[in-house]
Length: 161
Image 1: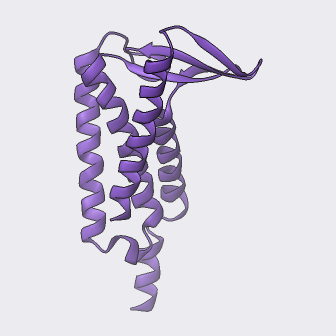
Image 2: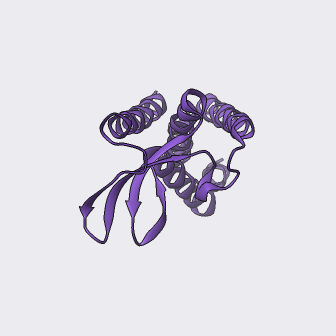
């Protein structure tokens, strides 16, 4: 259940921030928040990460849909196998965060043909958005889970049987 809340929260935060930018800024406009470090810059990205696959809207929509469906299947399988009860909260959380980010950017691709980006740190070249943060943080948490926790529950259960 908490996974759905995480997904919805990320989609809402992402879409609210994008609506605020599209409503209050013009494309290409930049507002210094912390001069020389952070600005809000309205950028329409028709590609994927780092503007790769530019102009490949149908491909990116298709890949996004497949990734979201697979993520939801993994979440469902995790819940079916005991989920949080077996200590997989990090696994389920990471998948939910990735899914929320994927849905946020998918909404933009379908409705506008581009993804609205706005978070512009001068020390980190690409401009990104809340959905991108979700996908990145979720992937980082999934990697941590896979390195440090995946299989540990099975080993622990086997030791107690």
